[in-house]
Image 1 (cartoon, rainbow over the protein chains, first blue to last red):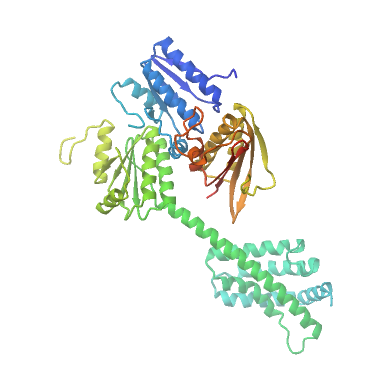
Image 2: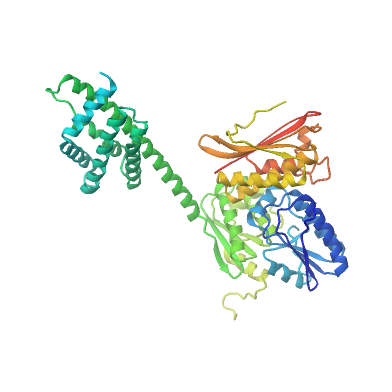
Length: 125
Length: 281
Length: 141
């Protein structure tokens, strides 16, 4: 697979907007790319926009949690934005609570959250 | 006498005095409906049926489920649906069809083979009346299910209380299906209103069982996954007792006594300055 | 060891699951059918997510297999049924496999147990050395 999800840099924040139906290998590639880009760019925050994502299964859910944990280790905060209601309900039913991942309703709110240090509000406490 | 002959004889009988027979039918039916339908409308409706019936007999004998009767069946279905919607009873609806039997009813000087033909017509009209009733019942079922859906919509309004704060006041008994609908509507409202605070007010809820409490908890967790916080307000003493007795953990979910307290909390968390009543804002 | 199969309609679609791409294809196929029988958006999402978990299980643990999917009818209701078959090693302890958090591979252990919670009907037939069949059904409201 040559398809990769692009990672954009805005100021000191990395922005990933997922627009494709996520195939497992793309997910793994993205996780690797992100870790590398955080180190290369010295980014302080990562925003993962899943507005266009129609389903999040346990594989993608795990990637989101792992990415948040990895980026925290590399001194960058991760915010997942734009989760659809149907996706959220399904994740709860599936038993995934995305422990430690911070979430925001929209890209704007997510960027806001990263701009305000000290505001700590993960999805699950 | 073969079916084809009988139906031909019927066609003859029905067409010979069609004007008179159709009028008699209209009159018989209009008596049972007691002026709740305009005569001209009824006249048009039944004359169409009459024509379709004769047509069906001519082309398809007594095979009322066949192709020749398609037109008649469509007309009957149309009639039953509109009767069901206008609130006519099943009897009134079926009578519209059955009254047709009476207009051809044999008298003492009817020849024997015409009585035979009449009996066949009677059977045919009975089958058609049953078909009418079936469509009638189906329509009523559709109306009932549409109404219960509307009721569900009505009973779960999601309102925007403030910039960034939406609330859903729940009133009445919560069952699992309704709680699920509320949950979906509330979460969608968060997106639509770009609100990151949600209040679920259960002041009007008389009782909560394990399943409903679980749905409420799931709603709160799902809202958090989307980046919003939920507050549950208006928990009545009995409900608090039930929830504790059931061993349901509300964990770190914020609960407030009243909707007002919940709104105050939501605004504070949203970063607004809140003063008490009478204070200078 | 074959359990009762959901009574699929005549037009059953079959999809081999041999690669990651097929998992994506399985999701798309399930969504198309879920939309056709007018499942609500939330129910569609639940069914597609369950199918994604099960398709991945078929691929990763079963070494590949086949998905058969079609519409089912019962008493005026219409639903979607999906059957995942593999001829892999089977599951030695079914109860354990259906427990949250238990995994024989590298996953979260939510695949089977989570998928079960997302659908209306769930049956699991497995035999050590004889493969695994999981069938799920979601009914329209």
